[in-house]
Image (cartoon, rainbow, N blue to C red; front, side):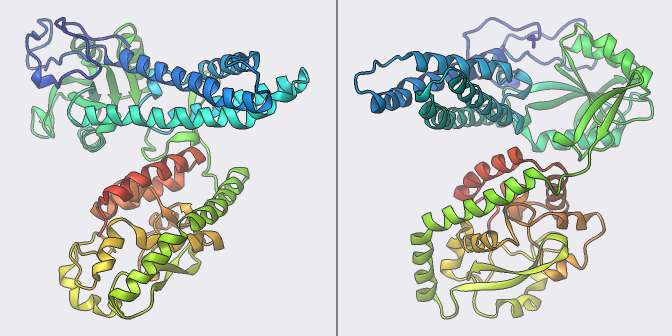
Amino acid sequence: MRDQVGLPRRRASLWPAPAGARRGTKPRRDLPAGEPSYPPVAGWEPRYRTGVLLADLFSVLFGVLVVGGFVANRVDPASPLITPTGVVTFGVLVASLMVNRVWNLAILGQGAEEFRRLGRAFVAASVVLALGGLLFDITQIRPWVFIVVPATALLVFPMRYVLRQFLHRARREGRCLLPVMAAGNVETIRDLITRTRGATHLGWRVAAVCTTDGLGEDVTEIDGVPVVGQLRDLAAHARRGGYRIVAVTPDAYWTPKRLQQLAWKLEGSGAEMVVAPVLMEVAGPRLHVDAVLGMPLLRVSSPSFTGVRRVVKDVFDKVGAAILLTLLAPVMIAVSIAIAVDTRGPVFYKQRRVGKDGREFTIVKFRTMVVNAHKLVTKLADQNEGHGLLFKMRKDPRVTKVGAILRRYSIDELPQLFNVLAGPMSLVGPRPPLPEESARYAPDVRRRLLVKPGLTGLWQVSGRSDLPWEEAVRLDLRYVEDWSLALDAVILWKTFRAVFTGQGAY
């Protein structure tokens, strides 16, 4: 992607200063009156990609030299640091990363696709090395396939995550953002603005708007973003304004012919055209674009609730739960003792919840409240701070001293690993509702019962109890619709951060 014009020369920096902090940036003279002029992104994208590339190459080289050297030394103590097998492994890994386009700017810094491509690259490299070993009868290739390549992946993935966190922090501070021109009707544009402001890690900043009649909800703006023109003049505004993304939202004005003409007019402008489909909550592996009779058609496949991937998920759930229970056994014993010393009553709290297909099961948690706390709900109903069907209080008088600590860091949820091991729950999935909650579900909300409830999920890594009820439902339904193994991996990774910060836990 190219930089916008008009940037004053300055010392190179990976993270440019916020737009409002720059000096010496003159507004472009060819912009229409009232249209904002935004300073360019100072080439941070190619620098970020270079940083990611160098980090990946360093991790691969380190894995091959250090881990590979250790493996080679165990086989032959006299082997040199650099071996022919090591050179081949390094070459295959780098080639696999290139073939899978893991350094494509479009996927860097956001979404699960970045890690999905990395996973494919390492799996492909392992397969190529294994087949090469069989073909050329190289017996010493086995430790390289089963030890060196996985160890290298364990270096690359965390490095990518750390770099992503630096980028996300910069975006929260108003840097490394891409100016977006939004075009559509007022309602869909307002929704886009709200979403981009709530998800700064995506790097979008809606900077200007075009509508059918050139008017907004407040005549000249929509939710604080200026309306600079009509939809028919969108291409001209986008080219002159130097916007990096042109986001087209649903509107009756957009016919196939007009969208095609807009794409033609934007060619060579450096702006990426993004069209929001009517199915706003369907994304990921379920969307496919096919050419049928010369027409591009958006094909939406059914959600995957069965099949090989689900079997893999079930196996991973049970193995993961068993491993975690073994590792966390000392912590769980210590927590049990603390609960018993703090207040009288059982260590564990059991409650009926609703699982997949509406089947009820008994959930197990560490007790964090006084005995018979559920009987006090009616007395506290007027102090409810929860959203929708949920009852929540930030300072709930029923919570014990030890329970407050357990809740803050979600330690009270650990016994649910037994539910995962037994089968009614998964490591990742929607929040398991109470029977009285699910009884009041609308038909669309009941779709969250199509999969097993999870120990963690999108709702937990996105704010937990701080989320409005509608947003929690939207996240759960999004998980049901767009589930994938890569999404599960990302959620599990983010769960650790959510647990340690205690955000939204009370």
